[in-house]
Image (cartoon, rainbow, N blue to C red; front, side):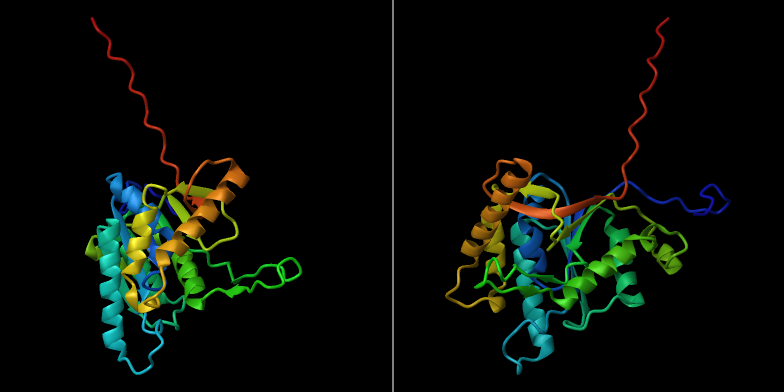
Amino acid sequence: MGDRNAPGAIQVVTTPDYEVMVIGAHPDDDDFAASATSALWAKQGKKVVWVIMTDGTEGGEVPSTPDAEFMLLREQEQRMAAEMIGVQAVEFLRFPDGHLVNSEATRKAVVRLIRKYRPRVVITHDPTQLFFAPDPNEEPNATGYLNNPDHRATGNIVVDALFPSIGNPRAYRELLAEGLLPYRVHELYLFGTREVNTYIDVTETIELKGQALKCHASQFDSDSDISVRVRERSADVAKEAKKKQGLDMQYAEAFRRIKLHIPPEPKEEAPTEVK
């Protein structure tokens, strides 16, 4: 830690502009993980931005479709979904789908966007979650799920960008010339995690989540109803919230919440003396 009062020192900005930035690996990841929460906060007048790390070109079943064509299709689907949710901005970083790595380039891209939008909360993948696997002795007919490496890479990129680079005046100094000052994010929410400690009541916006996911037509069979799956999963999360924390919700989204910065309480002004 350097001397923040040294001549020429640049102060770290702590006042947010946006309420939340959701950073997902692929088009539709933000929708699955946090679209109902995003819609809820947007309805409350809070500003929301979504970031998509990859170009989404490996998310299909037809190898002959040109990458550029499929990328633009998935971006169009994502924009439609975000508009339905009430998201004010969507950023596509277009790193290669299926090959995302925690590198200088990916970290700098995330630092640039967080300094640009200054979200109070950043929501992203839990980078520590390698797999989701029920005990086969307890559930012999259930299968596990191996977490996508792009999901884990995204989480690691974001965490490594959050500290120390985003708030370090000497990190990526070329960004200062763009007016992107060092900034301190207040909270980090992780989705796709086994360490849930926060549940958001999304009963008011669960239908919007289902409608937004339907915009990603390239990802679902024409005869499938993704909104039904969304309601069932969110109802299960609400039951979990009731069991673990005594919360009464019909539908919920779940996160691991980590506080990174607590703003100081405003100082009370001394009463003005009346003579």
